[in-house]
Image 1: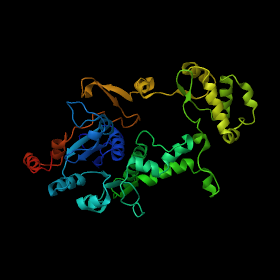
Image 2 (image 1 turned 30 degrees about the vertical axis):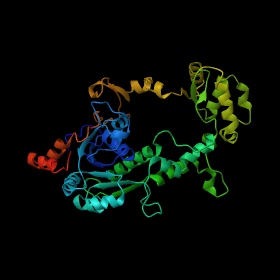
Image 3 (image 1 turned 60 degrees about the horizontal axis):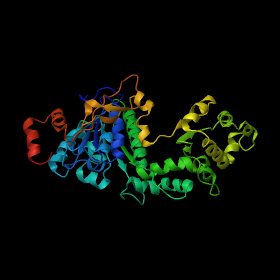
Image 4 (image 1 turned 180 degrees about the vertical axis):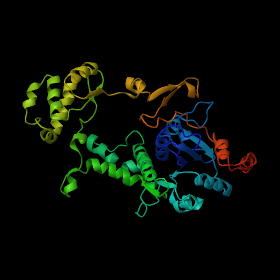
Length: 404
C-alpha cells in the first residue's frame, strides 16, 4: 500500500494517470478523492490545462484555476515518454499499479508500449482504461474529438435548438464530465470484477457513444416504438422549462406530482385550477405541458423570490432560488457541508484559495484528506524512491533529460 493511500474506499489502489485536459482528469479526480493513489504522469511541458485553465498567480506558474480543481489529491511526475529511458520508468510504474488510464490515441499507445496487451504482459492484474473519441471499429475510429465536437455530434446542441430556437453548446465541458464519470465507474467495476487474485482487463470508454446514449435515453421518446413517433421529453423541451423570473430574480419550481400541482395552484391563489381537466393528472399535464409551464412562469412574476420560497414550501411545492455564479459562492449549504471551503492551508496567491472538497461521504472507510493539485514534477523524487531508484539513478534520469 502506498504511503499516500489514506482513507476512502479505494485506499491501497494505485492509478497510473496518463491523461490530460478534462475528460481523463475528471475520472482520476473521482478515484483520487475516493482514496486511490493517483500518479499523474506529465510530459515535460506539463498538462495543457496548467496553461489554458485560467491565469495562474505569478508565484505559481502552471497552477491555473481549472487545473487545480481537476487535479487535486494527485501526485505529479514528469516523464519524456518519447525516450527509451522514460518508457522504462513508465513500465516500472505500470508493474506496481492497479490501474492505467489514458486518453491518448491507440496508435500512440502502441508506439509507446502502453497498449493493453503490452501492459498486461507487465502486470496481469492491471485494469487498462482508454478514453477515446469514438468506439473502435466504426467509421469515426481514430478521429480527433473534443467536448464541443461531441456535444454537437451527440445531439446535445440540438436539444438547445429544440427548446430555444438555435443549437448551442452547454457552457461547460458537459460531455467531458459525463464520460469522465463513466470511466471512473467502469474502472471501479473492473476492480471489483478482478477480485483478490484474478486478472485485470482492458476497458474502452468512447466519448461519442456514451454522450449519444445519455441524450437518447432522455429524449428518444416515442421513437422508441417506431419511426412515426416524436423525439424529446416535452417537459424539458418546452421553452418555459427554465428558471422562472420573479420580481427581483429567478426561481426554480418543480410541481410534478398531483399533490404538488394542487399545492402550487393554492400557493399562487388559483385553487379553481385544481378542477381544470388540463391539469388534473400527470398525464393531462404532460398533454398540456406548454400551457401548464406558461401558467407557472406567469404566476411567478407576482412576487419576489424571497416571498415565493416560504409560500411554496408551505404548500409542499419543491422550489429553490436560481443562483448566479457569484451568489453560488455564498450558498449556505455548500459552505455548511464543507464542499466549498477557503483553503488557508493550501494558499498559492496572497489570499486563501476557494477550494472544492469531495461531496460524498463513506461511513466505513473515511475520506481521503484534501491535498492541493500538484506542481509540475512535484513528487518525482518521492515516486522514484518508492520504485527503488537510487539517488544516483534518479540523478542520471534527470541528466539524461528524461525528467524535468
